[in-house]
Length: 147
Figure 1 (cartoon, rainbow, N blue to C red):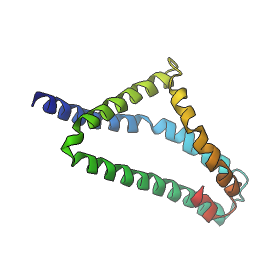
Figure 2: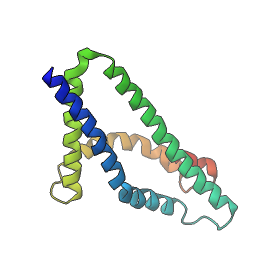
Figure 3: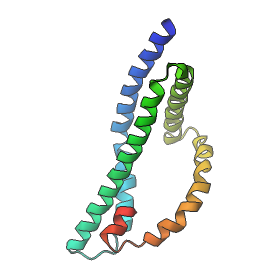
């Protein structure tokens, strides 16, 4: 019973870690999302269409984050309902916390180990890039929504 109580305490603590990471990640969001929106809208005319494109981009961004959250939340809930997966859940909790530490070390400039994990996504991006290239430069609201 002690292991279960300790694990429950770790789960509750991780909510504070996630909240803090989200709060402190605001600077990243301003830099990344702000930079992307600036790049996507650099050559747009100053008229009503510009605001519609900006709104469409942000609606698409929020909708994609929401969809991913729903999918992952559903998977997490399904996993929590299976008590036999508890050791696997604890392993994933440990992995998530190690990733937070690795990201912190990377952002602080102390380690480049996270770039090895990042390189695993290159084959996925190679498949997505041609589709994204068709959307750029953004000329209308539907293209901004998809981008």
